[in-house]
Image 1: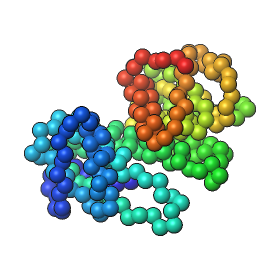
Image 2: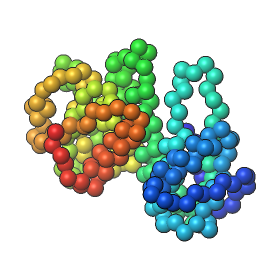
Image 3: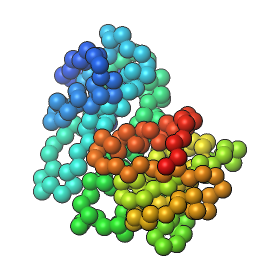
Image 4: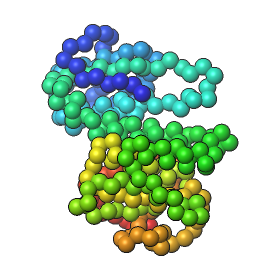
Length: 245
């Protein structure tokens, strides 16, 4: 993963920031960094750009997401960016504010890696073990029955738990990624996700939960992973209206 530094002073070749059009700043960041992936270092000067704090943070998130490449099985992985320096005002404040965005970039990469693994090299048992390893962050794991397991972030007892159901590799990767984001930031919200890598075709509200269970969408592709992770994360933290599936 590229290291992004909010710096007051930096040396190196600078890159001109594109003008904002119809694209959001996250997409601008992704598109910009893809043009410079094979530079070792990248310096982006923001001091003279009239940008709001949230726009800078979204831009930095886009830079992180734009550097993703799944090259695990390439005989000689390509050289990529090692460091991006954002030259901007009040870097210490921005560095602190960027922590939740950095966590989101981390978990999107995590989910993409799981989904991009070829099934013949990375079977369901390995996916299950990869997700189970997240217990090192304080996530709780409980094996249920017939290929089901439960992963949860305990949050705070004062928060009412939310229940989700993930079926298939894509949905399990998205669900695990969101739980990882909650754990990395030690969020208050309690969330439990029932997971299975097999197709079950059952009524998910029979899965032991006292409250309704909402199903994580089963889609595909890198951009769908990003959208699903962001949507679910925002839904959990900011109370977006749930759509029962």
